[in-house]
Structure formats: structure tokens, C-alpha cells
Image 1: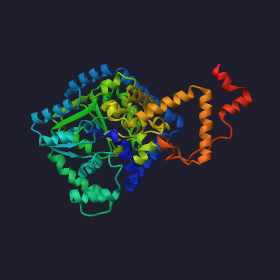
Image 2: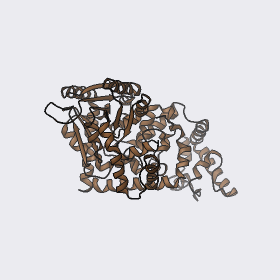
Image 3: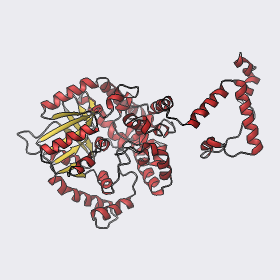
Image 4: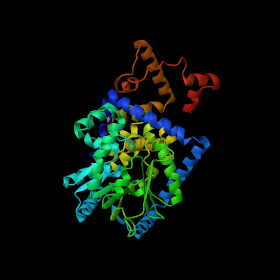
Length: 473
């Protein structure tokens, strides 16, 4: 997917005025947020916070031991009959998938939902090699029909209304006209069924990999993952290197906080734990299983001050709670990962210069950290990225000059006081309802505040003595 994150501001302006989009996003995110709150704290606030703390500790421990865990996972998977491959970047990951497809004479692929495959642009690469690719997650299927990209980590069609989905399926999949949601889902299921049976290869992601057992873990609500990973003769899983965790006991905790945070469920409908290809005494399952561990910039994050971002379990809770995402939707962010976590990891994965507006795409209200099941300090990282933007010279001339002028005025109490009095006089004299010049961006969306009768300096001086004189000594 082409990175268009530098277009966030104009894209957000368009999205804000799209009534259908805002209605759909509000409905999806509000529902997810309310359900998450209910199920996460169903056994009390203390219990919910305790399980979050436990999950956070598990992910931090896994990151601390990541190199060793990756080696342990590789050895265990190979013992289980899984072929383990490593991809340094998107190009290598795509090349490995094409080589597997060529080795096994693959012409048709079915896929389950996978953010990593979106990240590396796998579908386009397979199609360019004349391999038919079909997304089988219902949301991803609809996105593919519309030749769009997902707008949410968990709910790919969060930006679409039921009416637009209905019309799309009529136009692109020849669905008989109906307004019944169950009939629409049944049509999609029947549409996909034969494709599962005909597919040569299934492609999945991976929610977690258990190092001690070499187990690939996936969760879903639709049952499509079971068919993707077991019906075709070849199964390929592309997994970010950060998804490895130490033990089955750790997985028992994480597989509870993930559905609670993602969809407001105590558990997902399906939990898949894959330990290798079909055994001699088994009657079904793939003949070959490949796991490709994908780096694609993660090692650089791992060795930086932003390593904590790799703890993300892709639940989407921060999107559902974010006031910015709620009004812009996901496409405005311009790449695979939207919302608060996207505003952090997109600049880290594609380069800060290619996603300059995203660290500012936040009100810093802190809700993203508040709802994160592994307590990632997203607000802190957004502030650090803003600092990195300034330090790297990516801020504009007007910003730099404004900050220097403010620093100059703020360095002297007398200058600061004079500036405040001048601003107060100008405001009263000209009855200003907005700030002039580039400062108008602030009052475009806020009421112009009135100046206090007395400044803080005056009040302090009346109570504690001459603050101005004391500051200048």
C-alpha cells in the first residue's frame, strides 16, 4: 500500500464533512468502546486493571527476551514439521511467498485477515504473478470487492454503512437485492465456500506464536481461518517478529484481554492453535505449513526508545476510544495502521519524513493508554515523535520562527508582561473574535477567550511580593 500519510490534514478535512462516513465510524467505534468497558470490568474495576497489568508484564517480558524467544520458536516449529523462514523487509517477504507458490504450483489463494500482508502489499504481488487471491474475512471481502483498503485494525469496513455494503455486493458480486443482514451474510458465505474448496494455498497472519511449543495462534469469529489454514494443501503464515511470547500460560492471559479489548467478547468464537502440517494419522489439514517471520523495520523500533510500541496486540481499542479517529476514520491516516497506534508505528516503519502530520493527529487526551490492554504509553511516544520532528528539521518555517519569538519573549518577565498587556489592549480595542495570521488556526475551532481582569503576575505580586523584580535578579 502506497504511503500517503503526509496528506492526513486534507484527507481529514474531507472525511469530517462526509456524513455517511462519520455516522458509520461513530456507530462502530462507540459500540466497540461500550462493549469493551462492560466486559473488561465485568468482574470489577480491580480485576480488569489486574489482568491488564498482567498482560502488559507478559508482553514486556517477551520483548526483553525477543531474540532468544525467536530462536526457541523456530526450533520448536521445525520440530513440529513447520518450515520457518525469515524476511528482513516487505520485498523479501513477498519473494518468499511467491517462491512457495511456485514450488507447489499454486494458482488460487484464500486469505484470512492479516495486517502484515496489508503492510507488505502481498495481494498486489500475487495478482501480478497471475495468482488469484480472495479475502475471506467478511469485512476484508467487502473491502476487496470495493477495491478499497481497510480503515480499522479489527473492523475493516468501519467506514461503510449497511446501505453502501448492500449496494456494493449487488453491483460487484451479483447478490440478489435484500436488506436482510442475515441473507447478505449467507450470500457471502455461499460465495466463498467453493473458493475455499478450490484453493491451492491459504495465507494467514498470526496473533501470537508460543515459543515453548512452536504453536501459531489465531483468533476469529467467522470460522474462515479454520478453512484457510486447513483446507488448502499449503498454509503460509506471515507473522511480525514481535508476536512471539514465551509460554502457553502467557497465551491464556493474552487471549482473554485481546477479545475483550477488540470486540467486547469474553472469548472469540474460534481460537486456533496450529502445531504443524497434517500428521500420518490425521485425515485432514495442510500438507505443508510455512511460517515467515517478518521484520520490515521492527528491529529498528526494537533498538529505539519506541520499543514499547511492539507490545501492541492489534486489538484496535485505542481507535475506538480516540476522538480524532472517531471523526476522520482510518483512511485519512494514509497507510495500513490508523488511529493512535498508527500515529506512532507508521512514522517508525515508513520514516518520519513520510508521516509528518501523524504525531500531531491526537488531542493527547490519554484515552488510548487508558484502554490499551497492555498499557502502551502512546501519548508519551507521540510527544517524543513531535520532538523528533523538530530536531530533524521537519517543522515549517512559520512554526520555527513562532517558537523562537515565543522563547525570546518568554525569556524576560518584563517582555512577557508587556506582550500580554499589548495583546489585551489590541483585543479590546479592535474587538477581536479570532487571532490574526497563522494563530487563526487555534481560534478557527475555539471561542476567543477573554483576558483576565488581572494577570497571574499581578495576582502573585499582590499576594507574595514583586515577582517580576525577583525573576530578573
